[in-house]
Length: 225
Image (cartoon, rainbow, N blue to C red; front, side):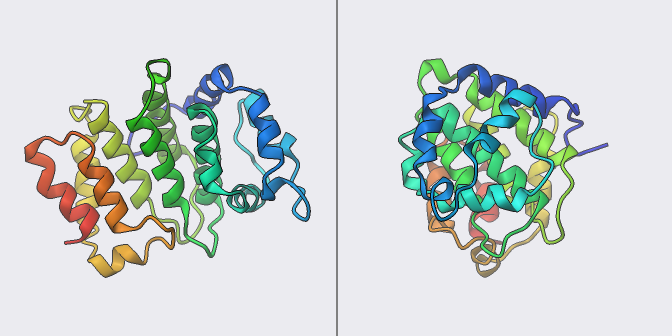
């Protein structure tokens, strides 16, 4: 049994929700990004395919990671919340299955949290959908050697706060797992080489309502013991 007791179908359910909201013309914009144009030329159809098959990629996860990360992440902010969330989910899924030398997965979690803070009424299904995806990712996707679930679990906990669902039966368990890592500030800085480090994540945390009883725990988790 996994941490969240997630259903094996939650990954497919997430893709179905994304497929129902994403605009196909956004893939035309993505096609022009560096990861999908010469000299990389990764087929955009490979990124579209999981939406139709309701299955995340089974082969060559490193190719997806490379293509997505070759794109300008600042451009992702021009896409809809659903497209941004899909690309982020695709990246962190592939990153769990195949680790890269460049540890930047935190930026993709950050993109989703950033958008969730500013979500429009029509995007209200986004947070519960991504939470369900994270639970499935944690429970059902095999991890490559060296994988660290820190940003996955931290993002889940922050989204629970944002959605006012810290009463979830796994919330305390996740917090205790994060606290048990006893990361120092230096160790936290080594977890990612992304531009948004400890300070950016702490600033994000401060923008999300936090019960006073949890404040010290989150400060220790994000800034180090």
